[in-house]
Length: 408
View 1 (cartoon, rainbow, N blue to C red):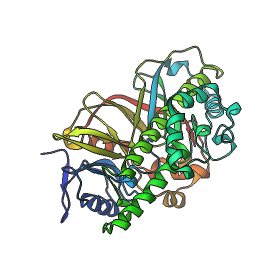
View 2: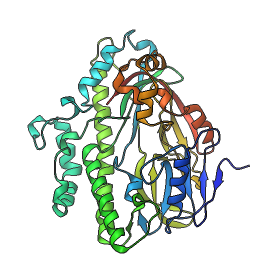
View 3: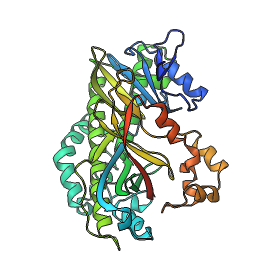
């Protein structure tokens, strides 16, 4: 018996789904079937157990293509992913109250939509931390300039001043304990405003290109660029840049979290291990699968090649996992990116109260107010069921439980 289920639809490539024991809504199934009908799918689409409805393509899907890329499948939070590091601290080294630790992190890492969400006005280099300014100049500035020289409308705020910032929604920073009581720092974020801007721009461009070509699509958000065209080259350059931005963004924040906690009251000196993990889960890359070079779009999925280290977070109040990939070829060497939503943000806000949320996050130093109800644990699938459904994709290396959670 295989560990995945096989779905088929008329005129579509096969769909292999690791969803045993977890729900998959009808709308998500329809989106999967629509994506599988695109003529450039390589072999099949792989579906992760955290799958749920997205825009065009489902979150929690792996879409391999030859000769084309679907920008909306990559999404607008280009390069969104996870970063984590283990420290030499043990649970017994933490103070009884962790409020000061949470406040230290919140002060050190800009987050949310308020004035604390960025480093200052666009171009205000004197307001930027030196580390951020140097990383921009060394690794990102020239690429950004090239992209914006061709598409000037992309050159507006939220670029350099968002580097090293968390953002909003389901982005978070956590202090966690593993199965041995060791302290970890973990965070979730992506390419911020600039990645969103790039994503929206090229998604719109793809729709225009397909419309002009007279192509009939099952969903307009499956609009694509064809390899070898000018717009394909421009998109891959922009998405590659945004993915680099996202990785550096997480790196900067993790460094700032380490420095902030080190200065918090009651924290003794500590070190961090060299086994930090930094992985994307919304991105596209060129890889080899089933004897062909193809473009693999992971929309809410992590690369899990043999030996690859990854992070699969639960929701606020739930466990998270540091995993090692098993290199399962049927999943295109992929695994889930988290628990996956089981209901919309709007429904969660209507269904649950602040008291429900406080009970679900008992023991976690975190926000317990109405503005985070959409991120309450009940809005997500059972992370243990998600992990059980993908036991042939990854092995668990560490199990983490958060004790501090900072939300954007």
